[in-house]
Image (cartoon, rainbow, N blue to C red; front, side, top):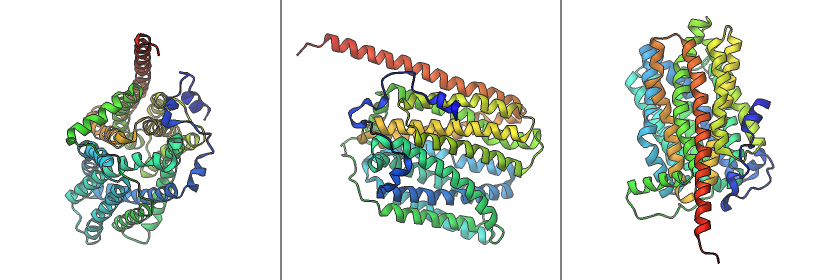
Length: 441
């Protein structure tokens, strides 16, 4: 973790982002201390429960798609799982600022659970077509596009703005650990139950999550502003634009995830199969390596608050240089797993830091819209990665694509950090000139 500590060090600048009045820094007592707060503990339990269901759902959805239509079916389902973020991300953020956020999360969980019931029934009856899988994937991600902004905007109220990094890191590390455990548990359950039963189990986890969230103390919705939906969305974008470092970090997230996810989703299974001569077991080990890296990054960030979060989120993308170089040059599966671990540290840390920076700096009145925009960029970049990067594997072998991505991803992060530094200095200079022209009291 020494390398990560060096990357995330806040020696770049002297002034912390948390200098805003509403983000006064309090001494950190560790992420686990936050679980003493009843409402956060309930929310944490709800997300952990639904993440276990998601691990089951991922296996069932991908395997059914593979059986029904082969690799093309998997690609179509993955697109259906990504496109809704582009369509509903902004509206999800808008509702997070219009409605009581707890109720939005409950409604999204109930909807996701209801979607999976007919899927489980059709699968158990042996009549689950590809279009049913595509529709289910689309609807599930559409509902998630409303759940995530509401949760992201509610979190500062649950733990305080000064502790959002620790909370985000704890949730991220726990979710990744639960996914790994869920995949292993699913393998055991499939020895005694049909694959479609995993959809039913996932539906139950969403209903349990909704019940837990319903026990959280209600909080009033942000003050409503009489304006058109587009005017309110524009207001959210303007709120982000007033924080130039954060805005650059969001743009870099879209570019970096497009490159890295487009390489990962198709490139990893192809690399393991064609270059390293391993099967599904080897692919699973690489996935576990990625999850282990993300867990390690989450544990670190849960214990060590970072002052310049938006800058650090940009620099975290530089970890893709060793990550994808190791994978592109790997001669053994162990080297590829090490590369996947570095990738997990990089992307997991970047996302935790970016979300935390937004939750600390953005006013609550527009926080839902900004979180919705971040979700749109993050999840939507998976779709753009599938569309623009993944087709390259039809023409090139995995190794050169991984090496190219190893260079491109870090360049996005370094270029973004340099641009953000220039913008912040210009803004500071403009404020200084404005202050010097103002009359003295």
